[in-house]
Amino acid sequence: MSMRRGWVVAGSGAAAVLVVAAGLAGLWRWDASRDPQVRDSVAVMDRGVADVLVAAGDDAAVAVSGMVRAATCPLGVLRGGGRYTRAADLYVPGGDEESVLSGIEQRLPASYQPRRETALSGSTRPLVAEAGAGVELSVRQLGPGWLVAQAQTGCVAGPSDPVEASPAPGDPAASAIRDVLTALGTTPAGFNTASLPCQGAKAGGQIVTVAGVSVSTDSGRLADRVPVPPQARAFAVAASNRVAYRDGPVSVVADASDDGTAVTVRRTTVC
Image 1 (cartoon, rainbow, N blue to C red):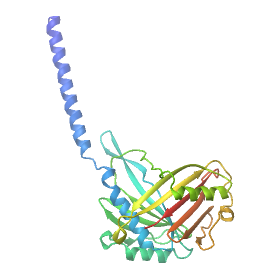
Image 2: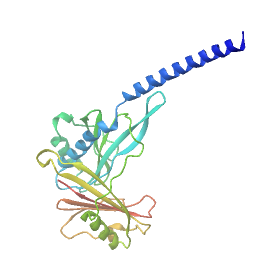
Image 3: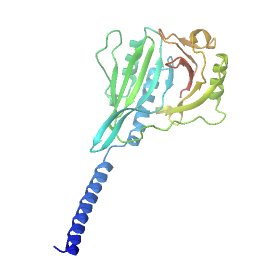
Image 4: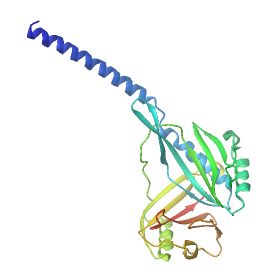
């Protein structure tokens, strides 16, 4: 075989490999384009958690968390996805957890098909429901007087670190949080915010939580140090270094970081 003919054969083989590779890449992109996207679930997640907070009534102190990628999962060949959650804490009188969960179950839309599961030892039976679009809704007891509502997607494509929003300059919630931290002898290192749309007759409004995290500080004995307005309803959170109270439509929750070096104060206004 002449050298020229060898070049032709080699070139033809390389071209064939490139054609196959391009075809496989195109097939991979087409398959990836069919993956479910987290952006298509956000509205359902937000509505589900908001419906739980409305169903809980006006007696609980609440705080909304931002969306997070709680776990990773496989979507296909060389494609990873995630299970995303949106959550809110609810603080209620110790001993009232069962009645609060039962009330939420009764008031949630029937389309959610709410039902109670078997309880773990020392806890109330959790509530689970279907919010739609593959989103599972649950309300579980984390401790005495402490419940968490959570909406979780199935395995979907999306960012590994969803962007956190910041409160607008001059937001009165940030000023109120700064006052609480000042009373604790510290200052905020930064703020973020999470919001849910109000539903039903109150549509058009928002449930908004602004959170402020302190600089490094003493986070001990918060129950003795956080100023609680005399007219507010305070909720004792046993075995937890945190304070939760509700004053009309405003909830405030202050808790220590896991390592005890900072304090987070969350201020929430409801519909």
